[in-house]
Length: 462
Ligand SMILES: *Cc1c(COP(=O)(O)O)cnc(C)c1O
Image 1 (tube, rainbow, N blue to C red):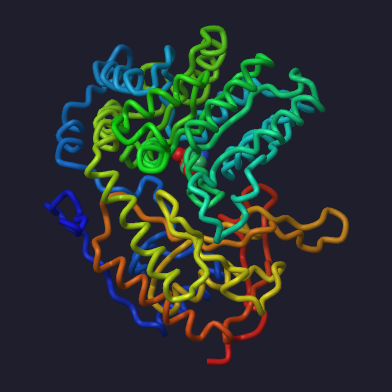
Image 2 (tube, rainbow, N blue to C red):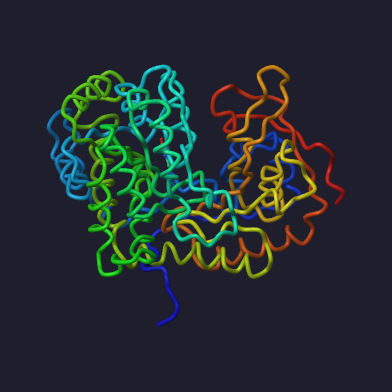
């Protein structure tokens, strides 16, 4: 059969409340044109994030009932630990309440002020946690990452020459670790090839620099390697994952992504000395090492989710959804990042709204319009998230790329929801010239995109 269908049926439903365009205009105004400040009940299709928003399976709900809430030595932890170790091969598994807590532990024990942490592209919490230690977070993506129409199959790769040059320039002791984000979330959900992971690993090993994977979407990355890289089509997603984990010294993970769970995460690593230092902070900030900020039932849901996420029918359907939407947008001439990423479809705000200058946040203006027009909530990944005001002049320094991310929760929306989103984007594209830019009226220093207040520069003419 040619048609790829959702490999599940629905047992429990959540109603969606329909709203009018007029109501949505008011809701967005009340939310200061920041989609993070909307009430979710006022959203029709919520593509803000794939983080913790997935639907759990009957087996996960059953596992939740098996959760053992003992403070120490819970069998739920043993099941969690065995599953994580089976997939990653790492010796020490530290559960955390989510991915950023794992990042915090790792950088706390590894980084110092004045050091540099390279990554293909740091996710915003990763960057913030690196910078919090006084170290510098540096992105070294291949140049294809920024070419939103390049057909390169692995646009998430790291620039190997730039990495080698950096190590040469700074010296190994100024680089406490190298990270690779699989898939590259902020760079368009694009995968990293096995060859690239292997080469980064060789460069790091030669200089005795630890390599850590930001493994939030490891299963989606495995699927891309299986589909696109020579020599992997006959391997299972799990075999592929095991191979790339074996090239690294550890990983940070948010189970809210490819853990198919609503909360959870972990830090996994081989070095016993580092693990024991991280465990001290785990005790201080998260909890006892056999639950680390999670309930026993959460550990069970994650353990089961990590098995389900590697099923081929699931990954095939998951990636097909993104490809379906991106290909149709591209066929209509709408500026979209291609090939599609693993968890999201990205619209190119700079090309979609060329009349809005980068410092007036075209991607944010587009995200606002998609909400007003069809109740679709997306997220800006551009100058609002990664730009910053110049410390002296106060003028906005744009991020260079300005994307709208349509992020799909796992196993939540159906094909007709995807068709609806396609129609909303098409209709907004048809009247794109009427859309006005934004400016910030209030912001914080760290992770400003979550809480900033914005204004529209001129009222749209319609
Ligand atoms: C979500 C995410 C994180 C942080 O995980 P949280 O569970 O949200 O704290 C880190 N890196 C990447 C690539 C992510 O997508």
